[in-house]
Length: 394
Image 1 (cartoon, rainbow, N blue to C red):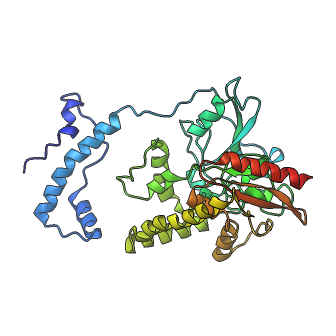
Image 2 (cartoon, rainbow, N blue to C red; image 1 turned 180 degrees about the vertical axis):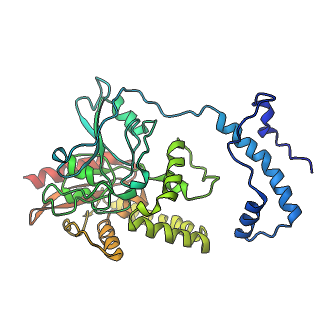
Image 3 (tube, helix red, strand yellow; image 1 turned 60 degrees about the vertical axis):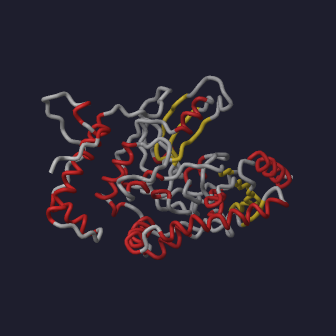
């Protein structure tokens, strides 16, 4: 059979004639295709399988062309040194996982301010483990957009803050670098997944129920998620998400997580295993329905916000729990990791901005009040929080 001629994928237009060029995507063997067809429950005759293989050659050639194209990246605009892992005596609450000193513009709205970056956000030249030992050794070659924006505005980035294992925990004990301690009482949780941020700063725009450590915190309508780690375990074709894809992280995470899955937390293992089960038995069914039902929650909030400026509730319905002992069963581990974000989950689902501010203390531990406003109405949210804070302090 004559090989299919996909004009857009013709290698001859890009390769040097007569010279060998290593293929980026190897042509699958017939036994591999047979196994794939069997897993997909596709009936393919032996001669048809050979035809499919021949058709795939042009597709593989196309991927080789793409792989050899210069890839546009994110800018790295400000000089920096590699940084270092802080010593214990300089990191007593374990809030830092890495220290750097990256000075931004001399002028701007953030000039003179120091900033910590959560360890799920890329900072060029600094390690990014997302709290998981399996991702040790990854150093982004790019600055995330939020990092560039901070530096452009004059901010001084002084380190990466500790976070929970793959950011899947509301406590502060699952990171591979050890537990992050609450600065009001080091025997108690600092909250998560932005545990280091809660411990290290008083005001930081990051996602987490860090009210346990008392600093004011705003969760904006959009925030960075581990989208690319999700991509790692989804279809090789992708999902059509627009925006910058950190190719180096996607590839590194896929290889590392498959090789060192046991280095992830019990919570992550639970999610990965159950996710695989749902994908194999109910593919896409409940994800699709969940996304549609999200509209019901959004509608409830929108209805309430027609009459009121904000919706108010406790950020967490209890004070910070004690950090767990060294020996935990899987069940105890998962319950401890998930018991905090009862009220905060809605903001992630609705996309509405929320802020938490200190409402006082019980037995020396902070209590938080959370306010949620309409989409794109962070100004009202900040005004309400400021008035509440002034009244509370008075």
